[in-house]
Amino acid sequence: MMFKKTLVAVSLAAASLASVSSFAAENVDLLIKNATVLTMDEDKNVYENGLVAVKENKIVAVTDGSDLKEFEAKKVIDADGDIVMPGLINTHTHVSMTVFRSLADDVPDRLHRYIFPLEDKLVSRDMVRIGAALGNVEMLKGGVTTYADMYYFEDEVAKTVDEIGMRAVLGETVIMFPVADAANADEGIKYAVNFIEEYKDHPRITPAFAPHAPYTNTTETLKKITELSLKYDVPVLTHLAESDREEEVIAERSDGMSPVEYMADIGALTPKLVGAHVIHVSDSDIELLKKHDVGIAHNMSANIKSAKGVSPAMKMQQEGLRVGLGTDGPMSGNTISTIDEFNQVAKVHKLVNQDRAAMPPVKVIEMATIGAARALHMEDTIGSLEVGKLADIIVIDTKAPNMVPVYNPYSALVYSAYAPNVKHTIVDGKILMKDREMTTVDEEKIRKEALDFADKVRQTVIESGEVVQ
Image (cartoon, rainbow, N blue to C red; front, top):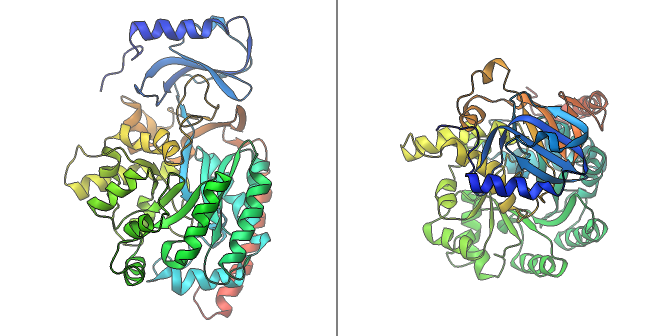
């Protein structure tokens, strides 16, 4: 792929310059210049020496840089050729589980034999807060500016998101079993409603319902959550078509239906729904997901690590479904920055399809940015660098040895980049990480709290008779 001085047609460039002329007399709050700008807009415009201008929390200009002198800025970032792109969006995780990372990585049926029992003993408000604070730092340092989360005590996660300054869709988990913050599903729904009412108008936090999965909730519960999501106009996050056990339970409950067919049958497939994993789906299931405009969270590394299979996410993306990258929780994929998914997503889909040209880098980056925004039904505000959108922006170092040289920025990101290559992370127009240093929270304090809690986890695991590796 060849990159010219600008990939926008002359007429579009003229229109772009005209669109910012009204801002020329104004100061802007932040100007990023001399950048390789990947806009991820509809035309995938790339500017080799471009600029992005931000006023308050919105983007007011994205150009080829020829109009640089028209802007005066309070803060200037000279990218010096580095890649500037939309912030990454993690469409599925359980951020507070960072405190359990690296435990029982290879245990069969790990969720039911290990994770659920461990959570029963250790999940608390304190654990959720500590784990979320640590995960937020990890994601922000890896270029994630927005994430979708499912867990317990989600109001504690919200507090950490608010403090660090990130954007998030936070789902309060509802499950049929007794858990730390609810004795049953009805109590879980009440907790979720209270959380939703508290955060409904927050500028960066979108509260949500998060029924754990179809097979871990009753039909009545799933229907009730669907009705309430429409009433409150909030998302529903769930695991969907993820495992053999789920298929078996739902087939028995519904006279042989697949999980997707069952959810459609009970009215739980709606544009509010974001389904994580979506591995075990047929062509007719995919048609149902598209018909009901459901968002899909594709979690490659977690799925292949658990040997559950490879989701037909590439097929779903090609057929126009809303597909975005996710990581799953830090006990599943271990790392929770989506930049760590890029390489595996590209390569595994090539392998599965036996096609070297499958899942080209631009499609991976799309899935991590505007595609992920679509999966969360947030594409009107985030996911691309366009005038009027919220200023969620990251800068990727192209001078690091693993990034030299860069002939194709998409390929460099997908096949070469690591999370530490992210230099600056900006959310809502605010620089939350500058030169790899956090600006809103004390990273060392957060790390120490997590290490202290890890001692408690070790002791609990030892007392249960398990081996701590």
